Amino acid sequence: YLDLVQLRGQENKKPHQMSGGQKQRVSIARALINEPKVLLLDEPLSALDAKLRQQLLIDLDLIHDQVGITFVYVTHDQSEALSVSDRVAVFSQGKIQQVGSPIEIYESPANKFVADFIGENNFLEGAITGIDGRMVTIETDGMGPIRVTTDRAFALGDRVRHSIRPEKIRIQTAEPVNTPENNILRGKVFEVIYSGFQSKFFVNIESGYRFKVMKQHVQYLEVGQDIRWDTEVHIWWNPEDGYIVEKIQE
Figure 1 (cartoon, one colour):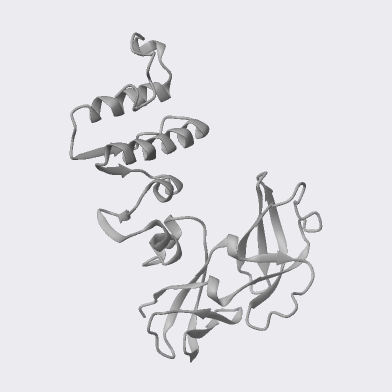
Figure 2 (figure 1 turned 30 degrees about the horizontal axis):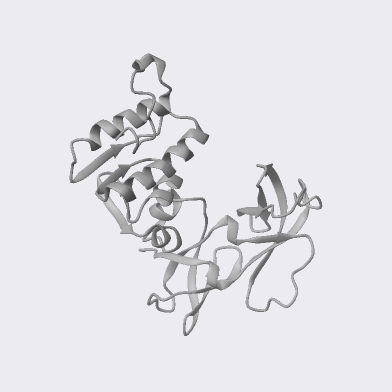
C-alpha cells in the first residue's frame, strides 16, 4: 500500500516530518489496507494548495482503477466532482437534485440550482412563441427573440428559463456575418478579467442584462487587445449551445 500511494521510502518518518499531501496519502493507505467494499472520502483535498490538489486528484483516480472498489467522494469543488467521477449526485438541502454522468450534469442540468451550482452560467427568461421541430423561439424579457434547440416537450406560451454557458458565447467588435441561425446581441464591455489562459468579459446589453463571456487564449498573447472596458461588442451563440433548464411555474 505504500507503493500504491507512492510513499515507498517514507515509512520511517514521523507525522510532523510529512507534508500535507503525504499525510493525505497515509490516510488513504490506512483506509484501503482493510480492503473495504466502499471508500468514503469526505473533502479529502480541501486543506491542500491548488497544484497539490490537482496532482492528488489524478493519483486518486489511478488508485481507484487499481483497487477496483467504489469511491464515494464528497466535495463542494465542482471541478473536482466533474473531473474524478463516473456519476455525480448534486444535493441541495438534503435532497438529490440530479444524478448523472459529469457531461449530463454540466450540459443538461435538471433545474436552475444544478445549472448555477456546476460551473458559471447566464440565465434568460421568456415565453415560447415558436416551435419548429427541435428549434424553439423564446421571446425573452427585454432582449427580443432567441432560438434554442431542445429534445424536451414544451407548448406555445410556456414560460421557461434558458441557460447559456459563458465559454459558449463568442465576442467580437465586428458584426458577425453568415450566421443567420445564431443569436446575436449588441452591448458594451463593463469589465475584463484576465486569467492567463482565458479572459472573462462582463457585457452590458441594451436591455440592462449583464452577460458573462469567456474567451480561451489558444495563441501566444491572444488576449483580445481590441476589447477593453467600454468597448462596443457583438456577442453571439449557436442555438445548439443553449439549454432550456426548466419550465417556470406561474
